[in-house]
Length: 104
Image (cartoon, rainbow, N blue to C red; front, side):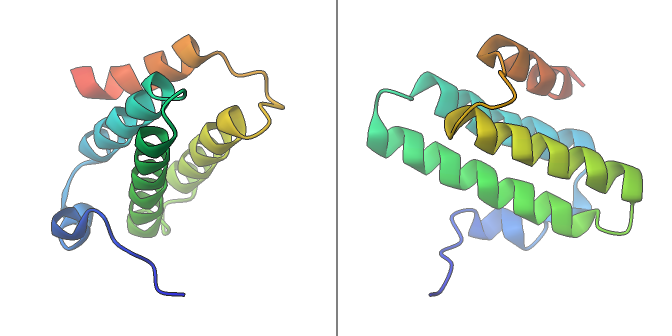
């Protein structure tokens, strides 16, 4: 199955942006997913876009072990929150994590 790239314009230049820029954009989609949990179509779109941005960012930083570990953990926690929440993640805390990147 072919993957549909929703952020085609960003995909081509994503690695040229700072990690703060990348995380702030991921945070925007995380925020949309949290806000739209009761609206399936909107939630799924935001969730899919967030995963795509996580994956693009992980690809950019795969040679940086510390950054890669943080990105993979953030992606895991994001997915877990919506599908099981075995980490007992608080959505307000999750949002605060990404908000710090938006203020940079």
